[in-house]
Length: 269
Ligand SMILES: Nc1ncnc2c1ncn2[C@@H]1O[C@H](COP(=O)(O)OP(=O)(O)OP(=O)(O)O)[C@@H](O)[C@H]1O
Image (cartoon, rainbow, N blue to C red; front, top):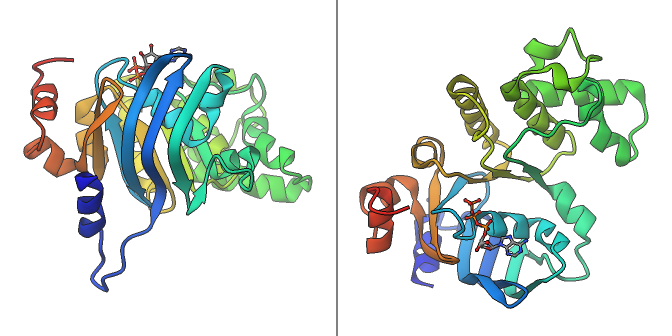
């Protein structure tokens, strides 16, 4: 709770108005069957920031991320308590349809997962499902999304070729373009560069930094250097608890909790 208060204070603008939040997570617990995976999470995630979630394997990073667009409910044994608000609305209430939530809160996965279709069709797929049929409109969305995902120049002459012909790094940027095409507010990224080589990783990192102008980004990463390079705020999790959540510079230079210090200095994990 102390952390929340501090975040609210720090994020006040010069006019005294608190910065807006994409998600407000309050007293949140999650169980897989009888096994508890998340414990009393309190975390306010600001809009238009890059928020990194770090911590050792199995600490609950992906579970937390997949909860934010309710993907976690694909696991039938999952139970939760507490609240998560997205733009001020409880994500578990009947008023916010899960399809609408997933349109607003897009997701990019660890391994690039394009559909076995053309580059064009990969990006046009979401808009088509949302009822856009006009070719000129779809063309414009495809071009804009590929440009925003910094891959247009590499693919503009081969839009009808199969996406599987792209390199891993290009496939990941295509998957980001596919996500952008449905105009989300938030992009959840689950270790989006862990399957990529260093050059592709840097390209995707650059892209993530550019995307924060328009989107709120929450990224799970195993890579502490990556969190330090790209994020505004970092959350450190351990054994299903949120140990510390603060500005990235702060967390890495002067961690408040001994467990955070031990982790970032490589004493465990
Ligand atoms: N479908 C599931 N059913 C039961 N337990 C699960 C399931 N998915 C994850 N868990 C358990 O929940 C805990 C948190 O897992 P989670 O995948 O969220 O951790 P993580 O920090 O993302 O790990 P990693 O960095 O290895 O991906 C672990 O103990 C894991 O075994």
